[in-house]
Amino acid sequence: MAEAPADARTEDRAGAAGAVQPPAVRVQGLWKRFGEQVAVAGIDLELPAGQFVGLVGPNGAGKTTTLSMVTGLLRPDSGRVEIDGHDVWQDPVAVKSRIGVLPEGLRLFERLSGRELLAYTGRLRGLPGEEVDRRAAQLLDVLDLAGSQHKLVVDYSTGMRKKIGLASALLHNPRVLFLDEPFEGVDPVSAQTIRGVLERYTASGATVVFSSHVMELVESLCDWVAVMAAGRIRARGTLAEVRGDAPSLQAAFLELVGAHAGASGQDLEWLGGAR
Ligand code: ATP
Image 1 (cartoon, rainbow, N blue to C red):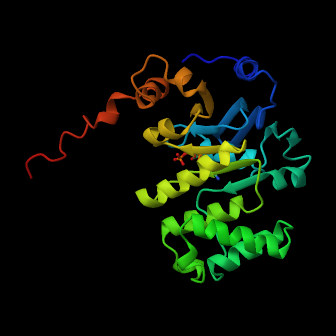
Image 2 (cartoon, protein in one colour):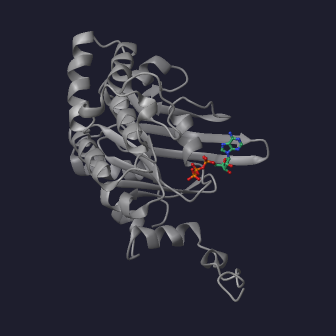
């Protein structure tokens, strides 16, 4: 479970595969402060390509801030990010053509229908109209949104919003897909649908990077995990490496981030007592 140099881990994996595959994402010395608050404290990270990668950590660990900087939505105070070998801030157009993003607090064009939103996104991505129509129809079908495609996005449920957001992020067939809490507020049926689409996508060699604090989900989905706490990377590696001897990822996670006594609620002696 101990930290190992990212390069060593990447070399191990590449060695096993017989060829050196560059990382999907390379982060070097990334820092972000908000006033006095250090949100991300100089992280170095290499995320392997073609894998389902989970970024996990407790509330306030810095996951969203990290993903925002990695995807070019937030400028770091210092540090570098490369995606597929392209620098996020020096070469933003190349990077944006290679990534799809489903951010936290997803903002969508509410007065468009789901279908119109995909048509707009596809044209913005420079895809020919016919191709946009073809891909949009398939995505709507697979994500079980075909029946609601003419409804306005403002009338979509939380799960439907996640799914149309995912369809928009996938439309241009990115190499790396970033998802911030993709399953939050999503019912088990929709979660299964989303999961199926993501599994098919990674099977084709693409990379999914997603953040979550639901350990069971991460354990069942991810090949590779990075654990963040207080703005730093506390562990990284394959699921088995990060889990170590712990019985579950949840147990390893609690050990790594240091669950404290107050978390059990023992200070709240008045709660549930005589009124
Ligand atoms: P969660 O799981 O709760 O979403 P997180 O791991 O995504 O948490 P971040 O949202 O990245 O964590 O926040 C990391 C730290 O940075 C927190 O202490 C947060 O309060 C702070 N922070 C994040 N964004 C801002 C901002 N725009 N202004 C000030 N502080 C911020």
